[in-house]
Structure formats: structure tokens, C-alpha cells
Image (tube, rainbow, N blue to C red; front, top):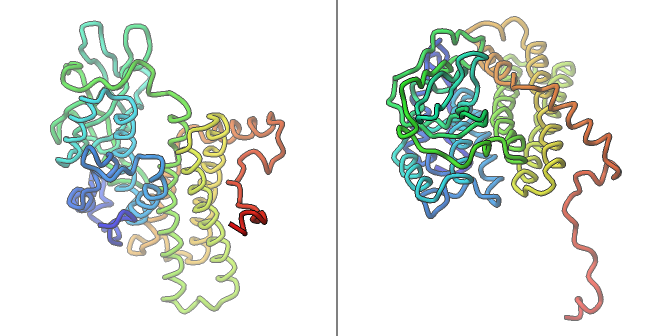
Length: 372
């Protein structure tokens, strides 16, 4: 499989039922070596987490999201977990976990928990509590979790779980993203020795890696936006309405939204990979977050207006695509991301065009250079 992504395939009804899971899609990722692809070549991967491979990783995440947002969400979590392992784990621990990825284990990042009963690691190294909104619950066998320790800081651990254990999916009756198998996982009774400690306490929230890494889920969302616009276009062609100027105007606005998102996500990925000037990078990724969210909402509204009632029928391809995208766009703290970006720009002394400068273009050759 090329790194641009899996073969085009739309998730079917089996991937949209409550409690379902994209089994076939994950099997293809596993078969094509994409579970190990984020690892460096020295650990059996393709180096997709390395800074100079940001474009390749972005293209892959978008391609998976275009196929299925549920699968894209799971794969993005897998990539995120491996990126954290590569960044913070001791070399021997990273090597062991890399072998797990190469053998087909699905990783994920589970950091959300209820106000009461969250995950705690006690002084005797025993775990108590749960993680909530854990995507891939019951199928992720190497989750990276954060657990509070005695002094209140959070420690990362990659736990070893058996498939189908410790997960409760009963509450996940969502509007969209049904196949993401999101639920609550209880770690009570396990010990730190049942997993691998990653890094030092509070490494998980280190900046700019923590906030800037949001570009990865934006890349997946871009795939979902593309899928909606593609289905919108297919409907206009199939119904003979592509020549209607009102339909063209709506579709044109959808194309502006999708292409703007593509350019912003690409630039956010490259800036994040550079890891220079943390506040500046985070502000740009937050700008991209706000723009992609609005673009997603816009393409949904435009497709609904163009297609009409047919787009709300379960038999129409747009119905599930729009539900999944609307659900996946609900990322944490969108207002804080937007106002944080705005505060950065308002406080900056540089002119707007200099806040996120483009790479310098080569100037005209000097006479000596021409002569040489």
C-alpha cells in the first residue's frame, strides 16, 4: 500500500451500527503494514512520525478519514500513541512497544475520565479507576493512558489489554461515529507492571507537542470533509443538476471550504513538525482548528441544501457521512482554541503577514553566481 492511504472504500451499514467496529478497515491497515508505519525504519517502520515525513503522514491520515472517519479516528489515536512513545519512552521500552505495533497491536490514547473515579496510580503501583470516551474500547490492546500519582501529576503508561476485556460500550449511542467503539474502560486491579511507564510525570502535556499535535485529527477531519463534498458532487451528477447555476454556486462554496482546509492543515503540519516558537505554532494550529471546524459545518449545510430531503434518508450516502463528520467535529475546547489564537495575534508586535512567515524564496542570482 502506498503511504497516501488505503484503497477507496466507503464504510457500509455494518460499520454504522451501535457497538460496531471497522474490522475490515483495520485488517487492511494491519495487512499493509500501516500500524508499524509511524515507527522509524530502525524499528521496522516507515518513519512517518519523523519531522520530514509530516506531509506523508498528513496525506495518509486524510486518506483513511476519507474512507471512514471512525477508522480515521482510531488510526489517528494509534499514531498519536506511537508518537508519544517515540518521544518520551526509554529506548528499550520503545523497542518492545515497536515490536507490539509490528505484530499488529492497535494503540490508542485515552486521557479523558469522569470527574469522579478517574484513573489513579497508588503508591504501591496499583491502578484504580476508569477512562471514559475511550475510542476503540475492547479493541485497542495497547492503550496509552494518563494516571494521577500521589503528588497530583500525571504519568503515562501503555497498558497490555486482552481484546474484549474491561470495556463498557453501552452508553455510546451517538448520532455519528458509531463504529468508533467509544466507551469506558476500567483499569482497577491492574498494576504498573502490567504495562510500560512512558517518560516522566507530566510529560504528556509538554508543549508545543501536546496542543500542536491537533493537526493530526484535523487531517482526518479533512478526509471526512472531502467525502461529503465528493458525495455532494456525485448526487448533482446523478440527478442531472450539475448545470444548475444555484447548485454550482453552493458546490463552489463547498470547494472553497475543502481546499482552504487542505492548505491550512498542510501548513499546520509543517509548522508543528518544526517545533520552533511554541506559542506561534500552537496559535496557527488553533487557527486551523477553527477554520476546519467551520468548513466542515459549511459543507454539511451546503450539501443538505443542495440534496434536500433525500440526503436525510438512511439509504443516501450523505446521511452517514454528514452524521459522522458533525460528530467528529466536536473536539474539546473549541472556544479556548479560537480565543487563544486571537489573543496571540492581538498581543504580537509583528505585522500580520510576519506572524507565520513563508519560507524565503530564492532571490535573483548575483552576477558572480551566474558567471560561476
